[in-house]
Amino acid sequence: MRVFDDTTCELGEGAFWHPKRRSFLWFDILGRRLYERGPDGRTEWEMPELTSAMGWIGGGLVLLSGESGLALFDLDRGTRELLAAIAAEDAALRSNDGRADPWGGFWHSTMGKRAEPGAGGIWRWHKDELRHLFRNLTIPNAICFDQPRGLAYFADTASGTVWAQPLDAAGWPAGPHRVFLDLRPEGLNPDGAVTDDQGNLWIALWGAGRVDCVSPEGRRIGSIPAPARQVTCPAFGGPELSALMVTSAWEQMDPAARAADPKAGCCFVTQSTARGLPAPRVMLR
Image (cartoon, rainbow, N blue to C red; front, side, top):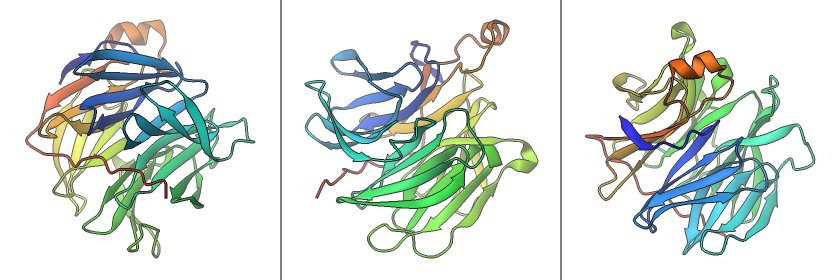
């Protein structure tokens, strides 16, 4: 991997390729910034709250996953409007991971600002309907989807576990979820994830400095090292959806640790033999 952008985010997250703007976007959650880098150069926006993930709606309009819930944000005008309040009354919580699903919905995770055990959960918003899907998670992560197999994936970084959740024809959970990956024996911490066009899961491993590729059967079939230990979220993009971008963080690093890991917080990119899937559009109605 090479450095794609050398801005050092305290907690880089939410890597996203916008299929219409042809640009990569990402967040510094703790720095309250949204960044975009594309054909017209680099742009940044200051966020009014801790914001962590996005989906695209149309034109310059995107859906943001933030501290107070889901908001509409116009990238061209810089305007923001709350769409759905989610746990907004609890100041101890913030958003963490999030991703649009292939059925037009959006999954949004919450967690304690101090990673309090069991304080987090995952919600789904779909055409004005909001449901609380999973509770008692600590650091919900790795939200992504395999539409042909009718599956959603999600993880709890703190427990070292990734689950697979069967979905019905409308994208709602159908039946119990199952353990897809148990990374505890290896001491690995699953963070953000995305699927490719073969149904493989590409997952960032916080603290291990790499992104692993895992088959739909749960077998590790590849691994790409990154130039920073605390990698957070991958996304496929570029003209052929074969460029893999990865965000990282310097959160909780003291000066000595940062000196030993000088690229911590940067965004990285590499060309992959795999191909991603276009980010699905969020449907408001």
